[in-house]
View 1 (tube, one colour):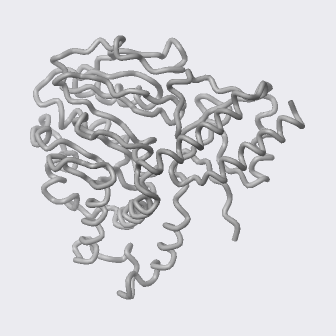
View 2 (cartoon, one colour; view 1 turned 180 degrees about the horizontal axis):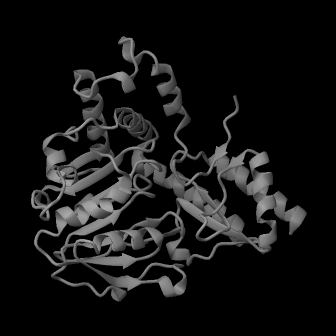
View 3 (tube, one colour; view 1 turned 60 degrees about the vertical axis):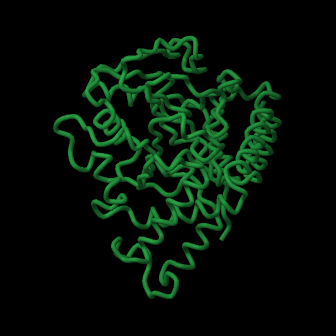
Length: 360
């Protein structure tokens, strides 16, 4: 079997070492004669798997003790509802920074529960950058300020953490969590779908300051109450046990690479060389302002869009998979998350240069 170069935006590449370990343990986990996916979530063995995963993510991100770490279901999309249900706490509005498709989805859903104020937007500029701090029309009475640190589809990311005063800052970090160190204490809540940098699809990570939970809006379903999950160690219902186990293996793998600090250097190097190849060509183009270019999702277009299909077909034949851009923006997109080896980026650059030589 030959592993190919996977640039999928999600579900995304997983570390090969993690897949190999899961393969070895698939039928017989640690001599118990069954798979982790067949094990009860109440079994002491699985509870240790879960507790170890939490300890490791706390270590990787230096999460303070006054934050709960929740392993939930429903994807990051469910958080568009869960955040206002839990964090409005009597307020009538929340502030949102609009930088693309995913932030717009969060805005629309929050509007079902309160006024979702857009405090800044770059829609008129085709979302090619993020608003600066001075552009944010923040309301000190808002329940929270929400932003998407990295827009997976548009390939635009924040190069700063918004200052929000006493108002809790909420971040959708689905696309770039664990890609670089973060100061968790600057946030009231962080959430992230697992299927990009954390593990397989089916699990969502929530990191929430403990003073922000316990006061939900009227009618909030039990399973949408953060405190319910916190009190039950994320096991109020049967959790996605295999995804949780796989996530724990990814955390161990990341620690073995040297942690978030070490992977950040690799990520920066991968992104810089790919952007350099794009910028050094008259054939390829990236539309995002340089300070806000994502190090995780790199969109690019060809000078002649009539060549798009040929580029994708030949790339797939060369073992370069999932490079088609999102249907809403077109073009190409290379997602180069933590688990995408630098060798894959090198292979993509070599293909791009050869394709340009033949077709440019």
